[in-house]
Image (cartoon, rainbow, N blue to C red):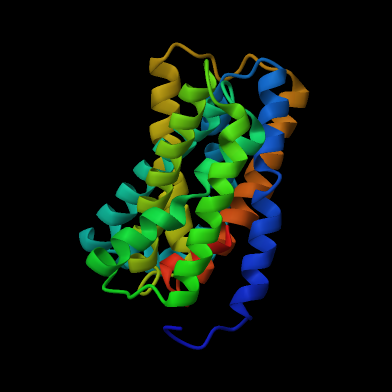
Length: 249
């Protein structure tokens, strides 16, 4: 641990895992109602940012105003990787099963573990290496029944989603040592929301042509998988190694 946490990190990570576990199910429900993947991603991050902005303004205004380019630019880069993560992973659910997509996108620890010694100067402990090996074995078994046809495209997109998620978490681990959680996630989620809205509009999608049920699903995604789930992981990144945090997912 980098410092003494106010709450047990394993408890917070457990809450985060439960919260993100409903993500793929909510996304598939939205896709079944004809919501495009890019629109789903854009609304998820936009609503999360809208909820965070007044909280950040009232509680962390001084910190935000004191931020300098060495903090702002990496946060925006992290947001770009988060946007690419959602754009590729959510799109993958159009082509492969929920189980296969989720298994592949959660191989992010492999990429974090490979990069940590070089980018974070963190050694990956033997127990975490064993956990990653077990996760990889399960991933191979889990996707064997969803190969061929469009599932190859879906599985490939999910894998790209894992790599971009790893980049987002690695940057977050570095920044969370000096930037508070609310400030960090507001910057990152906000940057990701802007990127996704631009991509969705450039692709010709209408952001305001959907049913009340769909907007409710967008809100549920913002509240639970995003604000509760991802924010739990970002909180833990301030206290635990990035490889450990990602392997819990």
